[in-house]
Picture 1 (cartoon, helix red, strand yellow):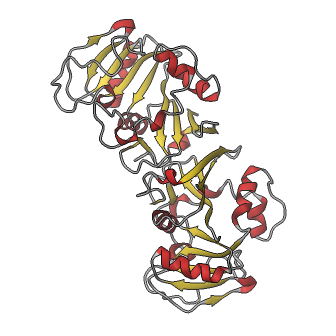
Picture 2 (cartoon, chains in turn green, purple):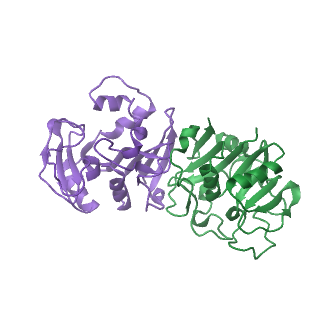
Picture 3 (tube, one colour):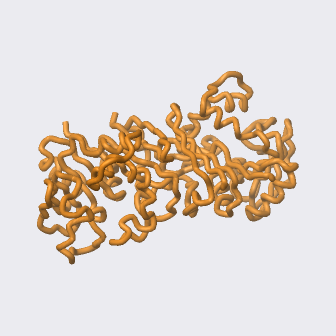
Length: 214
Length: 214
């Protein structure tokens, strides 16, 4: 059975998955890098950047589960890039350079479809419009029987949670208060009733909260 | 130096300190007892109820720090009871029976002052109107040089945090999504910059987050 999984999704203690004022220079707005300081030192993140070394403790153990068994990713248009509305810059191919770390089809959910973009290393960006169910169906077709990751941002994760399509949700609660931005948790009352929930704090100061579908 | 402290303040993962629909029958509204399931089995809570026994692990260790060195409590009017607006039932003396667990002066912040109420065991309820600074001044006068606890609810804790009057904040994050109610964290951007923050998850499934003023 192909599962739908969310990994390494960081939120502030007040529940924001990104800050306000996202732009080319500040993909997470006024949050800057603060939601991901736990992640940067891990071996997993360093390897995604093409670097050696990095921590190998529990933060890394949680982080590294993100790609095993994944055959496709779904991401929101705001994770793909800073443009809003109709595509004006067709040269934009994401934040990740010529060889993105996904190495699978990636379905970018947008009201403004455009031709697919094939990158090095097996990543192809497809631009699709539709309900979570419709986009998931396309991603499953592209995943070759493997699992589908919902890559973010917060609105996209929330949409798939609200549609009850997520089997595994890994959220990292970072003890900062952003005060403004995009909330993950809105309109998800009683989500926990459908999941087993586990919380583990780490020496980095964050708390990994894992929701596993019952 | 008399400190201002918050203890055992439970919030849902989406940041609500109480649910919606508070009433005499449901002091925490639709949250019911779910924010405090970690607390009920502790020796500290059982002793507050006049019972023996109870757990003695980390949840209890955190819980029991609530009263040492405290000379007064400040609480919001909604923590004191379910009445709103002008006091109609002067016989209401709180949820806690004839001998409340505070054993100090308690300053109930309300726009509707009424005569003080002296209970058994050293608790006296005073009803006071004013800014957080003004109410704290009165509570410090009543605390005899000891610390002052901000007892809740969420609006009251938030008001004192926003006024930068809190020295120690102990929040218990409970991994449930209430979806509605009263939020603790609104309007507190960058609160963490003034504190050292520590997070510890426990086998009860909750995470104790402690803010200690730098």
